Length: 153
Image 1 (cartoon, helix red, strand yellow):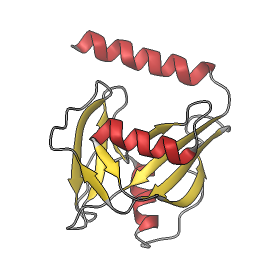
Image 2 (cartoon, rainbow, N blue to C red):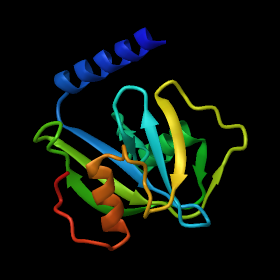
Image 3 (spheres, helix red, strand yellow):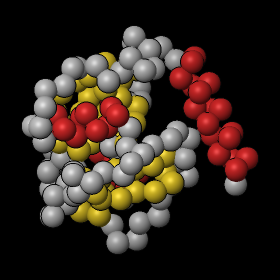
Image 4 (tube, helix red, strand yellow):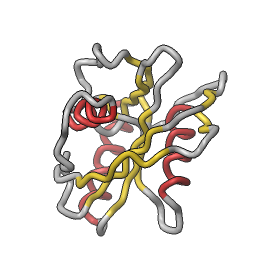
């Protein structure tokens, strides 16, 4: 099991080093009690908003719907709204992330995480897991209107 995690981590690092400019998506979803959906990947540490890269020929809306479905078995029932676009300087000067606010959704009762996801969970905004990444914390605060954030991670 640990060997698979190491291989996935190495593949992820290799992929990030060899690629050209990328565009990614992140989704901000809340449940009926206002908790925020976060995921923990198997190849990188910390809790993150669900999302991933946009594939060639795929639109940003298609990508955000696909990523939420793959990572959390959630089907978005209405079009998500683009909240903002950020440059992710932690990776390179060529990476940009589109953050979408998602409204109505439905989670499958037969959720089985894929091999990229270690855990998923809904958390109150005032008690996020300690391992929530700083970039994720900043995006959540910005969406909730708690503070003005730079457009760089």
